[in-house]
Image 1 (cartoon, rainbow, N blue to C red):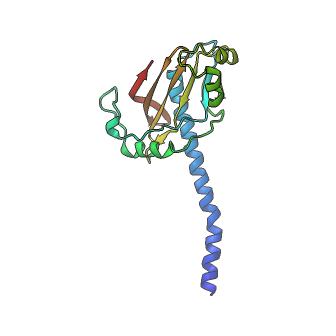
Image 2: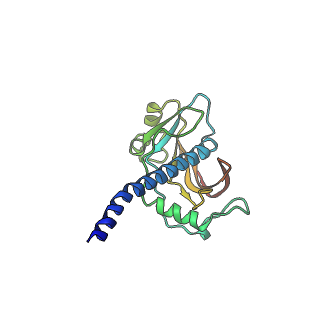
Length: 194
């Protein structure tokens, strides 16, 4: 009886340590996810100094199953690891409400995607007058999926792009690699331009 009691006490004492380790792992993953977003947004946005970037919130759930064979990378050589793609698929079963944790050197705002859809209208040829009235210094909005990582957290895959009035915009898979402490875009796949 005392052996069971001892085991129960040990388990009860160890449980908070496991939860703390899990929370710090989640915090580390979240930090890397925002670092990836912060690396892909500037080249996507190509910002105008006087404008403000509108980031759609929550993250976009990539709705389709995808395999490595479905990804058509622009540049030869750099391809996504299977574990990165698997994590991307798993992460995109849910979306994430974004917070102001982006490391950007220009003005941005987070906007509810439901509001963006309402302001841009259902007509794809819409002039977006309501959107531009609400966000007068913006030129559209960006929207990104959740980020998939490999186990070493040195490769990342995200889907996202830019939308603007009159069917303007593009969407693509973005493959990144982490060197030292910096995420860099190394390849792009399946770009759709309108």
